[in-house]
Amino acid sequence: MRTVLVTGPGGAGRTTIAAATALAGARRGERVLLLTARGGAAERALGIRSVRPGDGPVPVVPGLHVRCVDAGDHFRREVLAFQERAEAALDLLGAAPLDEDELTELPGAEAFALLHELRAAHQAGGEPDGPDTVVVDMPPAADTVALLALPEQARRYLRRLLPPERQAARALRPVLAQLAGVQLPTQKLYEAAERWEHELAAVQAVIDHPGTTVRIVTEAGPGAVADLREVRSGLALYGHRTDAVVANRLLPTGSSDPFLAGLSGQQQSALKALREEFPEAPVVEVPHLGRDPEGVEELDALIGGATGEPAAPGDAADPWTVEDRLASEGLLVWRVPLPGAERDGLGLLRRGDEVIVTAGRFRRIRTLPSALRRCSVSGAGLRDGALHIRFTPDPALWPRGL
Image 1 (cartoon, rainbow, N blue to C red):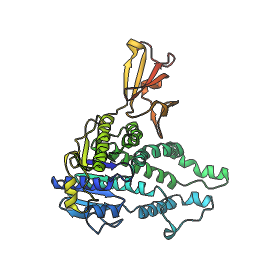
Image 2: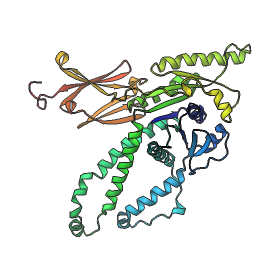
Image 3: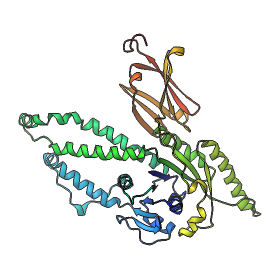
Image 4: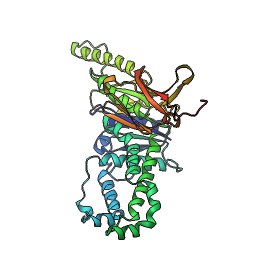
C-alpha cells in the first residue's frame, strides 16, 4: 500500500497539492483516499460541499474519496476511555471525572486524530474495496516532523513509566495495598498502557512502511531553502524518505512586464537552489493559475510529473549504518544521514545503551546496536551530509580474538 504524506511551510498550498496528488491517482485507476483535517480547504480545492468532520469517506470522482478527521470526537472518546480504565487511580487521587459534554479538544488533538485515521486507513487497505493509496494532508513541515516522531517517543515514555514487566507482580498488589494502607492502581491502568502501546506500534509500522514517503510543498521564494533545511535534516534523523519537492505557484518565464519578469527570475533562482539542496528527490514545478484552484477540472491542470505520480518507494533499510574499521583504524563508525544539518545545531550524548542525537530543534534517542554497546564514543564529525560517530572497543567488554 502506498502512503504519501504531503507537508510544507504554512501557506505553501499543501491541501491543494494533496488534493491534486490524490486526484491524479484516481485518474490512473487507483482507489485513493485523501485524509485531511482541513475540511474547508479540501472542499474548495475539490469543488465539493459535503466534507464534514467525522463523516465517512465522501466520493469525489470515480476512485477518489475524501475523509475529514474529527479531532474533537476522537479526543472525547480517548479521554473517556482513559477515565474508565484509570478509575481506581483517579479515585485514589480524589479526582472528579469529566463528562463528555464538557470536553473540548486540546492543542495537539488534531495530530493524534490524524495518526489514528491513518492507521485505520491502512487496515482498510487490506480489504477488497479498500484504498490502494492514501494521501494525507499533513500539518506544516516542522509540526509534521514532530508528529511522525510521536509514536516512537510515546512508546519509549510508556515503557519507562509503566514497564510491562511490572504486570507480572499483579498478584502481589493486594498484599502491597494492605502494607501501604491505600489502594494501588488496578490492572486497568496497565491494560490501557498495553492498548496504547499496541496502537502506537501499529501507527509507527505505517510510518516506517516501505511504501510511505513524504512530499514537501513549498513556494519558490528567496527563503525556501533556508526554511526547509532544518526540516530536511529532521526528516532524515527519523529515517523518513522524501519522494519529491513540489515548487508551487510558479509564474511563467519570459514575461515582458518587468515586475513579473523579476518575480519569475527570483523563482527560477530559488528552483536552482532547491535542486542543489535536494539532489535525492525530483523538484516538481507547478504553475500559478492566477487564482487558487477550485474543482477537479482546475486540479487536473496542476497534475503532471511526480505531482500526481508518486515515486516508487526504494529500499527501506535502516539508514543508520555501522562501518567496520577495526582492522585499519581500530574503530566502528555509526553513520547517521543528516542532509541539511548544520554543525552548530548538532548535539550528541550517550546514556548507557542509548545515544541521543540532536539536529536543530529535533531530537532522537536510539538504542545502540549490540556491538556498539561494548564500545566507548571516541568522537564524531559531520561530513558529506552525515554524522559519523566513532566508537572504540572497550577491552573489558570486547570479546577476545575479535
